[in-house]
Length: 288
Image (cartoon, rainbow, N blue to C red; front, side, top):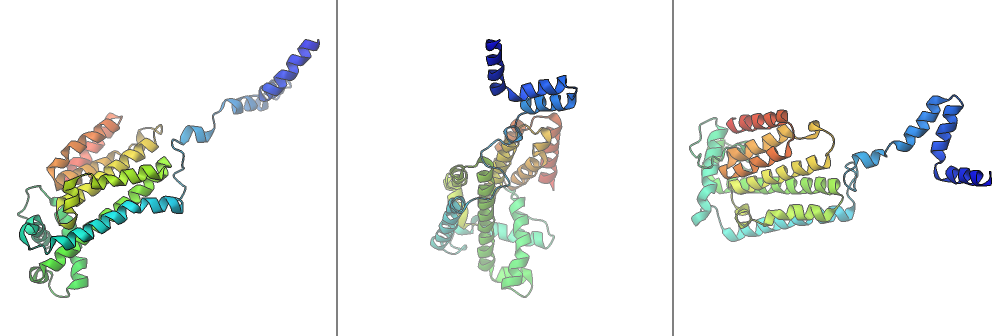
């Protein structure tokens, strides 16, 4: 009797919820008993849904925000210094391909066909055609075609600044998202630092060329990969299939050497239906 009482007391200390469930069932309160038992076996919601150590809903601390701003500020400083050292766009090799994209953007803004399709460069031409009008509003005041032909250096300078501004926003937003999904600002900084790994991209930050825009699209592609990894276990609906297609389509329309990155979503997407969505959006974006 003494041993049985000791075992009962030990069990009460180790398995209190199981014993309460047993007593509830014996007393006729089956729902209460089973509810206590299920509560013990059910895993914590945080353990099931949270992949990384920082919730997506949390805001970055001032230290994290400061670290995330380091690389974007370095990019702006580098591009400004490189632009000043390179001289005007008409000087030597600076005119290629900046002037070609300016003229084709101007033609596209007037709903005229473009003649430069080597890359094919359509994404940059569309970006330039959209940006020419606010530049004309700020710096011009007359006819857009006349102003571009009279002062092309002004428009090229603002187009180059527009590309750097878009890259800056991409780096900051992408860094914040990666930091929130991983909980580690160092990972976000390393993610951003890939901007400086390519000498071709570093040298093109002073030009109006496809490389800065290619860099921006590659960063957003990487952000989508981080997003999918952060939502692992939530099913095929959490896979950004059409977003992959939009980025890849814009990249292919910009420059054909973006094509190898089109294989990445095929490895990331798990369902055949998501493959079809990705391929369809990619082709539609490229053809448009």
